[in-house]
Length: 358
Ligand SMILES: Cc1ncc(COP(=O)(O)O)c(C=O)c1O
Image 1 (cartoon, rainbow, N blue to C red):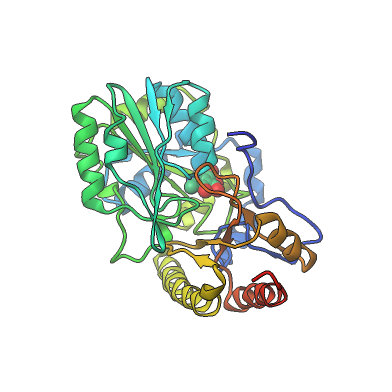
Image 2 (cartoon, rainbow, N blue to C red):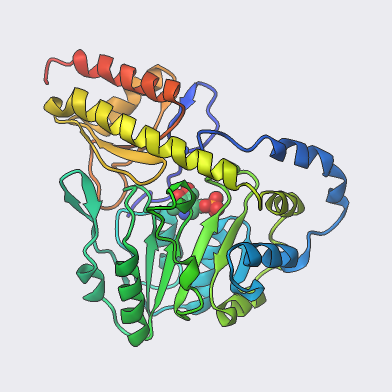
């Protein structure tokens, strides 16, 4: 797990097209810019402690209680906070997954188990038996749903069965739903509606991805009131800044924007999958099925060869060969606008057509 802290999204002035950042291709809703400009005067004040108004607003929206919610400086803050608060004996993290899970886990225990997603034809699937086999008392299981970087989604029945099993073993489940807003209603397997039933469940969501605002830092945790109180007591009450609070208040009615995003994403998922499969399948390039706004490709060449070629064209993507559980040749791409997606495809076509070794 060397060099596991490797993120996309750094500003690089030679880059025209950045496919490493997996935020909404429709960009931030325009009103966010105006909201910040109109509220500049607020910097004279402290933010509201514990974002209490947001708890009431979003509690109503999601049909849960205000005391089921905790707002944080990004979902990332809440992941670290939760792990530090419950201090599990063992942590199980299916791999490959978001590197911060492992980093947060490693800061509190050496007993970390990393079962692997397995490739089944064109998708990554996790066998829950590989999780069950590793549960001892006071184990925390961390999963991404949808998972980064595989783009895979769990079935709701599997999650509920896992929760029941963990409950019997006095163990916990942390589900990261940072990318769930990209999933259409018919496929959505969010556990938010189940929060009242399971006192061993904690969910994190992020405003970063769907609203394309990584710089604002805003995430929300959903859990049983006892857990939420414990987390609030263990952290700075002003960790959510005042602009993040203003934005969250005003984003409560963005259902149309989210729906538009989901329709766009599902259309591009299908388009890109067919495009890459139909054009490159014979060349041993494999594109994987995704349920969210990024996808993995396995190239029959080293990741570096592909990335260097793209970089010369001003295109950047996420080297996925350094995710535990993946290997050289894997690259993760964000779904961007149709025009940008086609530009990427055309550049890759040039590269692959010019290779004699194929
Ligand atoms: C799966 C996953 N969860 C959480 C985060 C972090 O979200 P936030 O910006 O809300 O801290 C990321 C960021 O890349 C992510 O990929």
